[in-house]
Image (cartoon, rainbow, N blue to C red):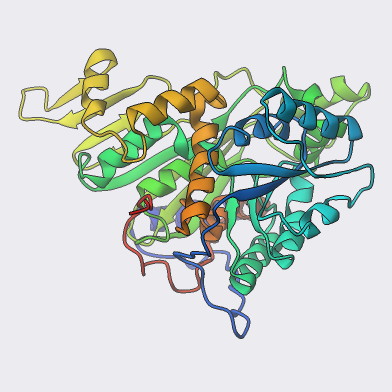
Length: 452
């Protein structure tokens, strides 16, 4: 143990000093791109006048997706699939209540009934809202059938699945997007615009998290799959809400890339206790710690801190903090901006009305007042879910690159398996693969594509 701690702290010291990759870093492999494939950065596809959508999984997330997508201009839900027939019926009832046509294709009852939906000729986009373990096989088959795919978070659970989705997207030239709604929250979108315009100077450090006491929600997961997953898997198993928005601020694979990662966790104080209460018997083995912290370094010498905690009564937080040479932004626990000034204090803090006035000068290009009002009226986590769906359909209709591509999916999901590798090796630093295979700096800066 002492030897492990010594290696870890020595490696951490090298990282902090900017000395590049320490000698003790755990290497990861980057498979050779198969012959005939090329990267899908900036991928576009033939414009679709109407995006015909098939939804797989009409449970916790899928039921709300039906209601949202039915209200997106240019979208039509043509197929519904769930293992439980009554959920498909609920989806049809939701469409009827909104005055929309019934889905022509319905699939249920059999374990792989989703294959019929993927094969349905008029489906353009397969929208996947199942439990985590089914995301990968459905997405792979859908792309093989020539469909674009949108996958709930996390889209992939290990490095093999991540590379599989990358290769399938590159091979089929189909969009493969993860449904990371938090990048479309209003504070995050405004702060991204501020960063793009240089308000914070050079952004050098960012923080994100998923801290959410799931005590009231465990019963809502079909077959108790989420508790079971935490029981069997160690690491930050749900990183994308925290890392997605801050990666956009840092222009990850749009001018910078993650290079090294190191994680630490607590032992399972609450996890095993909660599982024992749920199962009515003592659970002695519980893999995931109650709190997991991950520190990531980028090629350009910047840092990212990510946290995961679903087992304590800690207040909900996605952390979301942006630290720049000239300014700072924070959404949790207090929403504020802080900018360098010539005043004696050296800085000025903006909260409440002053913060809103500052934000008004940095309205995101896609958030017109009318659209923001529509998003909030439809809802979905305050409107960000609707913005996510709207942008996905908008880009497909106009033949534009999507806001999030398969490399975003890969980078954000990779925190789970890479954090596990670090933890299982005494919190050793782990090399983050270049999922673009060399194209991470070909495009400079994140931007929203708009039709002319």
